[in-house]
Structures are given as structure tokens and as C-alpha cells.
Amino acid sequence: MKTQVVIIGAGPSGLLLGQLLHNAGISNIVLERQSPEHVLGRIRAGILESGTVDLLREAGVSERMDAEGLIHEGVEFLVDGKRIAVPLKALTGGKTVMVYGQTEVTRDLMEARRGSAVASIYGVSNVQLFDVKSDSPYVTFEKQGETCRIDCDYIAGCDGFHGVSRRSIPAEIRHEYERVYPFGWLGLLSDTPPVNHELIYAHHERGFVLCSQRSLTRSRYYLQVPLSDKVEAWPDERFWEELKLRLPQELAEKLVTGHSLEKSIAPLRSYVVEPMQYGNLFLVGDAAHIVPPTGAKGLNLAASDVNYLYRILRKVYHEGRTDLLETYSPMALRRVWKGERFSWFMTNLLHDFTEQNDFDRKMQQADREYYLASHAGLTTIAENYVGLPFEPVE
Image (cartoon, rainbow, N blue to C red):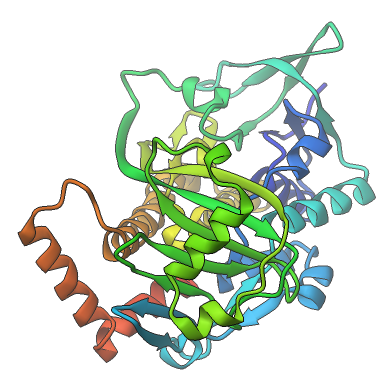
């Protein structure tokens, strides 16, 4: 087989890149280790930055998102019993975020790819990358006992932290940065109406809380818990009671409880690898960086990578601008590190850490008082939350 771009990974970043390239007349094949059903079974984020929304519209996959997604013009913080509104739209010149689950984004992209009859190969194993520093890279994989080869011009590694793409960059070239946080988030998904029309980020002495949502009838709640906790120790009844204890009375009384559709504990970490490019291999999304979910940046940073790589490849094929290829990693990393900073900032602002000393706690309190009581502080939060602008590719 031969194509122009091989995309490894059929999550939202791989499928979005494939859709944009296809629309631009650039041939591509997507390889995925799991089945389509398994990919759709992943429960992930649901807050889309304004730039991500625009990119999905540009890809031609926004019809259901625009019909069913919920536009949010603000968020709320709950600190020391006080509810503090952050009017995103007013503070950012009209920008908003949209609540639309990553699972739904992936579903829309899968359907668009099926409709365009572009190749997606699921259930592959033993994916290997060869000659990525040359002008003739190729990828091999196994499918139903047969070894297959795809010759290509470029490879996009959209296969996550545990995928083969990042490991294909020699260890002596990779520079990895990491921060592991000493707690996790216990998340519960339920078919219950959200407790509030806007998302709530809450600091509480019993632990952080996030009241999120996927629709007007489906809610997603998170509790900060020790990393040693097990999901089995948190039956639904215990989760709901603990959530009520961490919310003010007027919200606790409004909370509608119900059977959990999904429940899991996610560890929190910050991770970045540099560079994000090695020869004609380009890392995208979780293959290159991971953020704690506090800043709602995971999927959005992946979409940011897709934006840059797509626009560079379009100029390569349409205008012969191969000089732009070497700009991908530094350009992507500039926005990645700003997203990492905001996620780190939000995590430190709203969680209590077991290793904190009295000075750390006083500084954390000062940060909360400044950022949540100052117009400049609220604007900083709002600008980062709705998404910083993409750099032009030129």
C-alpha cells in the first residue's frame, strides 16, 4: 500500500487530522490497534475551546455538535463558601466554550470518514515505523496474521502515551518533563440533570470538586481522592453523600442523584516530550503531552497540534513549502506549554496537597484571593479557559 500520510491512532486527533487532510485532497490511512467500539467506549473530556469548535466546523463534522452542543458563556468557582462567576464571553471579547463529549466528537469523525470511504484499518498489531529520517518512510503492521506495509511521505503519531510513535524517537533525543500529582479524581457519569447551568470548580477542605456536564440530562462529577483509593470503595451512595458535603447547602439540595453509568479514578499528571518531530514523524496529542484535567485542555491541545500539522502539510502539498516542516515542533510546543501552565495553575489553585507547608498554603490562598477577586486575574483565567489563539502558519 502507498499513501501520502499514515496516521497511527483513530482517536479524535487522528480522525480529525485525517478528515482535514482528506478534505484538502491529501491521501491518508488511519491505523488503530483497538476496535471502533472500544475507541467509542472511552469516557473522556467534554469541554471544547472556541478554536477547537472552529476546527471541527472547518473539517465539516459540526452538524450534530452545533445542534446538540451546549454553549457556555461562563464558569463558576466555589471558594470559602463563596460562588464566584467568571463571565468568559464578557472577559474575552465574545469567546465561549462548548460542552460536547469527546465520545461524540469521535463518533462524528468516524461517521464522516466512513462516508468518504477513506481507509481506516482497525484491530492492527505490531505497528513499526521505519526510515522516518529518510524521504521514504514506511510503516508495517499485522492484521489477521498477515504482515502489511504502507509506504508514505509522512507519519502522524496520534497513538497516545502508550503508543509506538513516541518510542520510535531515539531515547537520547527525547527530553521528557513530568510532574505527578499526589491525588486522583474519582469521576461519576450519570443520566441526571446538572446541578448548575454553568460548570463549577470548587476548593473545599474535604477535597476539590468539579460539577460538569455532557448535556442537559447527563452530568459528570469529580471528587479529589487519595491515589490509594479504589473505585470499589466508592458505591454510588457514598459518592453522592460526599459530593453533597463538599457543596453549599443550596446546591446540595438541588442535586439530583442516580445510578452511575461509569465510574473511575484517574491519576493526575503533567507530561511533555520534546521535540514533537523526528524526521518525517510528527507526534500529536497524548503521544507528546498529557495535562491534568483541571484546565480542560487535553483534547484541546491535541486539536491544536492537529491544526498546526494540517496547515503545514497543506502548504507542503499545495505550495511546496517543505521549509515549514521544521516549524511544527516549536510552534506546537509553544501552545502546549501554555496549556500545561494553565492546567498546572488550576490544579495548584484548587487542590490541597499533603506535602504543603504553612507557607505554601498561605501562597495558595493569596493566589485564590487575587485571581478570583481581580478583573485582571479573572481575565487571565477566562482567556486561558476559552483557549489562546493559534499562531498563523505562514
